[in-house]
Image (cartoon, rainbow, N blue to C red; front, side, top):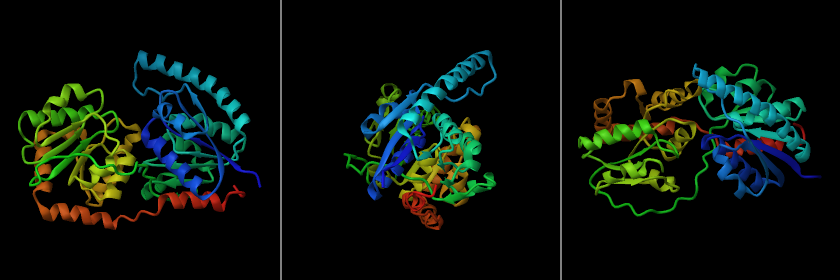
Length: 360
């Protein structure tokens, strides 16, 4: 029996790319497939995919600019031209790779591969990471053989679709120990906003530190590579600043509380490591999906949700003190993670593919 050819698509951000690679690695452990990949030249995949040892195509495509202005109109015209050019590039790649199945984790870079797959009647499955489905999932879900959901409540937005609750694949490197010397008598707060850092959170933490409002905690602060030089002077005996960290499991295991945005993968990591958090959704996230993600943990009493427009340093410091200095609240938030039922994500997805291998 010849090997099954699987084309992977999804990227732009780590939230789309890393789950896809986690699925690929799981499938590789269970069977023998030929993999190929389509992503965006400007996505995170452009610096990662070369190490995956498979055929790939990176296309020049980006998401639409949703602002109303002449500049955004011009940018969207360019996007439209790139879509036309990219379509033929993707079609050529399909003809060469002859995929039997397409797996997508969403993002703008997966639109064209899924469109070509639908046109050529090649079966595809989707994985939707967020509580509120993205545009790509909405467009293609009804034709998908299955749509795996990171959050069960997303199924109410996907009528007439074969949805399967799987949870989100967590793609983290093995934990590497780090040299962290902090005050053992204080609780520790981890602050981050994705691989690039969050300008909003960085500014709020900067103001709090300048006013000595965080002296009651240790702080591990991941600021983003572009922000490190301007913020590194805040480092002290109770504050560690990183531009980037590739040992997140170690940090999760050694902190008490997290302040972060609420991307789908961050939510999944918080669930995996059972870390109480204060979540501040990025208010311009597409379809406001970060709000829905954060609300999921908030409604399960594992997190406190503070919207950007309601965020003040007084509210933040008050919330932080209330959680970190009250063992009953902190322990309750930790134990509430046990009430969240998450399946074995990678097994759920890979077993479906293996069981339907020749029947898709």
